[in-house]
Image 1: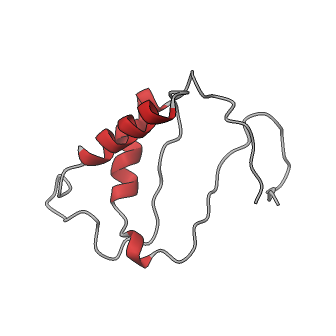
Image 2: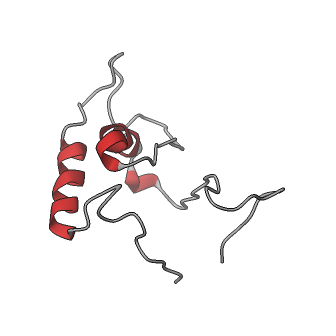
Length: 96
């Protein structure tokens, strides 16, 4: 499996594993049991989410809401689509 260094550890999110885990757990625990219009969470039938990926201090609660909205028991595949922040592409690119 490919991996890369955590380039933004210490700036966009905590570089300390236990602290980062605590923050993520807290945001996930704070997601209410229903949406504002009363739909239960996880949202029945949800098959995809759009989650922000900014620094966790800015986007952590919104990302937690997105991830809690889908039932992991029904997830078979995960596709992560995102922009390239550092290199310009004329078409789509796929990492190995």
